[in-house]
Amino acid sequence: MSASRTHKRVLACGHEGDPRSKVCRTCFEGPLREVNFICPDCSGKKSRNAEVCRPCRAKRDTIMRPCQDCGHAFPAKLRSAKTLRCRPCADLWKQNRPKPRCTIEGCNEPQRKWKRCGKHAVMYYRALHGRTDLKNPVKRNVGQMPCARCGWHEASVDVDRAIPELGYVTGNMIPLCPNCHRLVTFGLVSRPDIRL
Image (cartoon, rainbow, N blue to C red; front, side):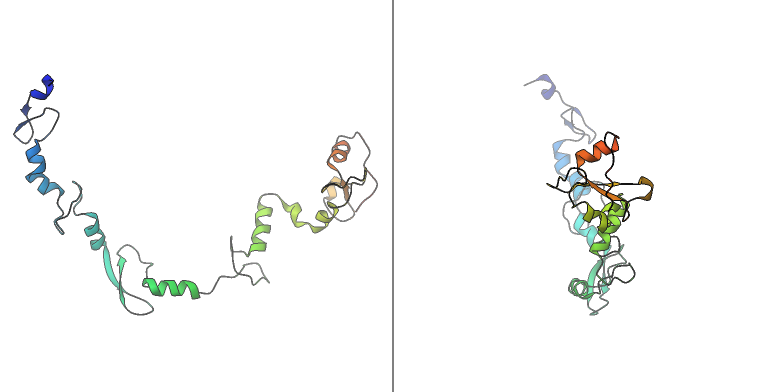
């Protein structure tokens, strides 16, 4: 045995014990434990600084409130003012409550996200993130045509603007494959005279 284990000193409880401890084992398991770790309501275990154990604290925070629909009393938390229905009535209300409708004028579809239906939510998202080109059906159709310069049509092509200031409007779009689009952009070849 090491010397530190055999050496004893007077602890805070008044008994001799291991110098690394604050109280001796007898006091820790005996009356001090009874005072510090026993719940006064249910005689169960509690933490040292808590007034009561967790289940008793939950009971103290719970009140019996009458259900708004059926009138039966149900347990509700003191702090929660939103709980107005018992569990069966709340489940039934969630199933039968009216679904909110899309906020876009003329649309009567149920809301999905951002107070809009699925179609309008996608359009809103694309508008937020700068993908407005996907909303333009004419540009999408021009992108499915073969390249105006070389005729390539293995996949969808890029859409170039004949006059950049006008944007992607009918009569100002030219379908170009990615290679021809890059050549036209850098001015290495002339822009085709076909406009859609």
